[in-house]
Structures are given as structure tokens and as C-alpha cells.
Image (cartoon, rainbow, N blue to C red; front, side, top):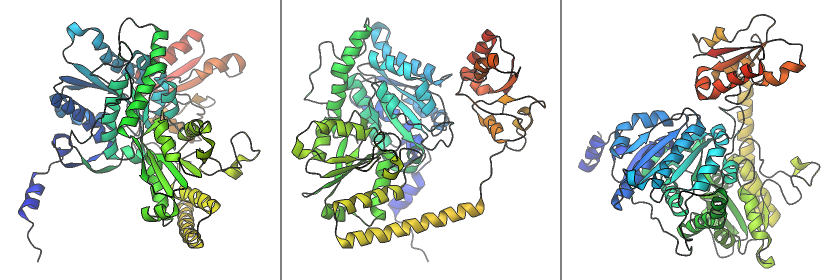
Length: 552
């Protein structure tokens, strides 16, 4: 017979609700990464209120995986958002949403009509939306944020192109716009680094970027929700320029550029330094091999160490130093050099194209010769993107697709063997790698047995018939579920464009082909988003094209 539950446990179970993730004042609550992005502005508002500030919040963006459920979560929590003076207004498209968020920071230009001390903002969109909004990001970031405002641009990256027509990595776009990039590795870090991102945005007068991917934002866990959990430290080693770093009017473009490059980025670096947003997770007195990673890659790298049988104590014994990066750009140099000091070699573990690796090499290149370890990442010491006729032979960590703990484990083992570790460690790693190989082979065999089924339209979906074209005709595809017509041999549909460019490829083809007409599939959502401009372009060019506006 089961013993009765203690009174305090029974009381806790009786009082817990599904709304705790938004209403619990302190303690732990269970939530997804998407729901953490809903809770984040509430925490910011609560922190401001505790500091005596009357602030409000504004959220705008455009849905898309892995942030496809964010707008639904925001609508579901609208009662709790309204209680904290947080307004959610989705954009017609990503760049207009970003422009609306930019407008919240411009309120400081009209102090006589402000209802609040400041308004903080969140923009959200998937990778293509980041690309689309680059012009807004550049202008808004150079203009600056409000003193009690601040902005976070949340990017949903699709490294494997699961729900996009191209794999996306937003780090480089954010960098091009001069926006610092936070990369949370867990649901808890979405809250913790999110509060730092707001604080940095206010201190440095910059927008903050936040990179999210499916493995993090769509995961769930129990997290601490105390508003005062994160301790914000304002830098004491940075001197504010005359006039500060915040938005103002008038403000000439070259003056904005000078303020950005001479002061704002250094203010951001000072904030990273003061709050130790990048730090060593494992270190010892005799370290010689360094591992540095951020976000999902950090989680996968830690799993790789476990898979190799290298726990924290063994890492210290072998001289393995592990560095966790919370802000991938700009990489704070003094923290990075402290991490590198005394090491013989550093392996940079990051997905897609190099972001941390290039910065690390730049920061260490002109440093003291006796404190400059070898830095590897995508390639081993004999390879290089432009130097080898066969770069694939020298890959350590591929830039395409994604990384897995198994891939990372093989790279770590390879480098440890090169550095020279004991025979017992080599034997242990080889046994573990053999187990990883066996699991991967079994999985590949299982997948080969089950095969793949090409996706098809749902039963009853109008696209089953609406994507057919008359015999002898051809069609071009657009973005949306009707894109699946390109996989169907009976639909005579080939090629596609980015969202909002549907059919415009025909404008470039028409003068040079014997074909006289094409159909263009255009979803009603895309039409509302930006597709109307594509139709206008085709009309302006006078080409013979039939648009089919498709509704699901």
C-alpha cells in the first residue's frame, strides 16, 4: 500500500496550474522555449517596476519555424501580457514588424507625449525574415535604443532546412548590421540571457540579437522564474561619450556610424566583460587543450565528452579547458585571451560557417608569441578553405548541415590523440567511438529498411487539385505548403523563388524563350506578406503569366 503524500507535497500538487509559467512570482515553473520568450518581457517589466520605472513592452514579428508557435503562445497569454502593459501586434511581414519595433524607441524623441518611462521591444522571425529585415536592422541599430527601452531581435534559425528552402544562420547578418548576438543553450538561458540582452541594449544603445534553433526553443524544462534571479552589473571601465549612446534627433548618418563604431560596440564589450557572459565551464591548473562553443553546439560538445568517457574530473586530469560563449559576436577579447592562456591548442565547436573561430584567430594573431595556441575548427592544421585542393580530406567539423555529438566526439578524440594522451585514455575513447559507430550503422540500416515517403497534401486539401495545370503548360512554385507540387511528377511545376518573388523569374525568362506563358502559384499568406509586389512587377513588365492565389 502506498504511503500518503506529505502535506507540503500534496498542497503543491493541488495548487499547481498550467498558467504557472506566466503567473508564478518566484520558484520553478515548467515551460517550453517558446513560452520562455513570452515570459521574458513580463520579467523585464517586473524588474523595471521594482526599480521604480513605469515601462511597457511591444512585440511584433512574423511567424515561421522554429518560432512558428510564438504568436499563438502570445495570443494565449494576452491577459497576462496586458496586465504588464505589453502589446502584441504581429507584422504584415518581417521588415514592417521591425519598423514598428524601431518606432517604440523613437518615443524618446517626443518626451512631452510619452505615457511611460520607456518601451522595450521584441522582434521575431525565422532566418529568411532576418535576411529580409537587414535594412531596418541597420538603420534602427545605428539610430539607437531608448534609455529605458531596449530591443531584442529573436531569430529562428533552421540549420537543416527542415522548414525552409535554404538552411539559415543569422549570426553573420546580425554582425553585418552591427548587432551583438546572444545564443542561449537552454530554456533557462532564454530568460537569463534575454534579461542581459535587454540590459545591454539599454546600456550600449544597440539592438541585441538572439539566435534560437529548434533543439533549444522547442524544448521544455523546469526553470527559475524569479525576476531578480539575474544580477545585472553595469560596467565601470567604460566612459560614456558626451551625449550618451541613445537615440536622438536630428542625427546625421555619419555621426550615427561614428557613434556605433567608436563607442557602442565597446560599450557592449564592456557589458559582456562585466557580466562574464563568456566563461570557463571546466578548467584546471595544467590545461593544454581548449574547447570553445556556444548554444546548441555547446550542449552537443558536452555530450560528446560524456560519450567519450571524459567527465569533468577526467577533463581536468587531461588538461582540457572548456569555454562557454553566451555572446558569439562581438567576442570579448580579454575573456578570450584568459581562456587561451597556457593552451597548446583550441578546437572551436560551432555549427555552420565560422563566427567564433575567425574572431578567435584575429584576437590571438598579434598577441604574445609565447601565449598563442594553435586554433582549429572546421579544418585540421593541414587543411584550409582556400589552401587545399581536397579540403574534404581535412575536415574536423563540417560547415554544412549540422553537428552531432558523434561528429564532435570524433574530432575531439582525433585532436587528443594528436596532442598525446595516455594509452588507457586512447583505448577508452576508441571503445566509445566504436559504440557510436555501431549505433549510427544500426540507425542507417533501420532508415534504409523503412524508406522515405514523399510528403503529399492532406486529405481534402484544395491544393490536391488547385496545383494542377492544363496539359502542355508549366508552372513555377512559391513559398508555402503548395511548394510540395514541385515533388509531384503530374504537376509540371519546377523552380521557386524567395517569399514575395513568385512568378517574377518569368520576367527575366520571357524575352529569351519560345514558351509563351506560365502559371505561378502564390499562397494567400504570401500575397498578404509581399506577393502583391510580385504581381505588380509582372504587370509592369507586361509578361504573359497567370497567378493562382491559393488558399489552404
